[in-house]
Length: 412
Image 1 (cartoon, one colour):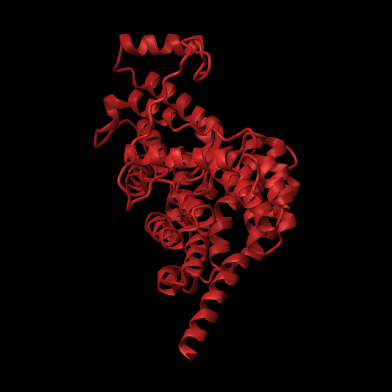
Image 2 (cartoon, one colour):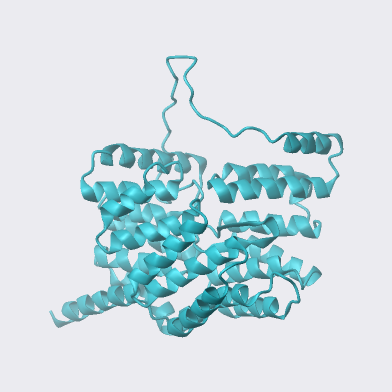
């Protein structure tokens, strides 16, 4: 979600992740499910988990829906609320609740338009990209001026490397006469496409100007743009600028899990592993934070390393038991950095690449291929980089290492 990027959920009034870094499911494709041990507290008064207080208005709405289950507008309102909670808490159970609320219409070939949008949003979050794309294409045929549908389609198309379709959706947003279709939204939509086409410098300059001019406005949109600026800066090799942009995004929204993960990655890549661990401390309920903190503490030989690594293994096993196959990106990182199993890591990274083809996925497959001394495993990424013309500081270094290793092997 396992994707990667910030998805501005404008219709829901929240900013969330397009996949990968926030759901709580990891699975190894080549391993039988491991049974998680059952925990029985010795004290019946012991608190096992704390759940949020129920909103009285939501309780009333659910009672009304139970009394009149065909009220689609009420179901849509409740499902939107649960998707907002998913984005805020990074808890995929809320996606399940939203789907259950929409169950009456979920399997219809032609559900109401609002249900189509929410169904596509959920499908995208759980990495059902073909299904999400089909629903979004159908919705856009019904409502071509739906900015949220176009934006979500741009995200899904980018994740699956359909750059022409993504560009079409960004351009469609630019033509809309709605408050959503601002220059900063359009530029943030187009920036990753320009960057993948080898124009990261131009995209960074354009988006920087717009962010600098838009000192006020929607905090969610501004945070999304700042994280995109950070990614562009990282591509250009300017990790200081990337960290500054992410710090600004977290100042706007301290609960922005994507920005926090990206900042932690930059800190670890630049030798500030202890800072990365501190950035994530206390937030291990989010699996994407846990995996990074487990890696950081493992590298630091920290006092919490054993506990964090064990917790991550438990969550991987629990996901395997459920049969989940999302977030292979994070499990591949764990296998490489903690388990020191390069062969398994490259297999996971290869499977992940089959699902989503973003820059982070390309870097991961190249990194695991380097560790496994398996240039052939990186062949899809090498071909992708040549076809797109993408230039990325980290990926370029990794591909250069593979080329050098290949030349050395050939000279023997």
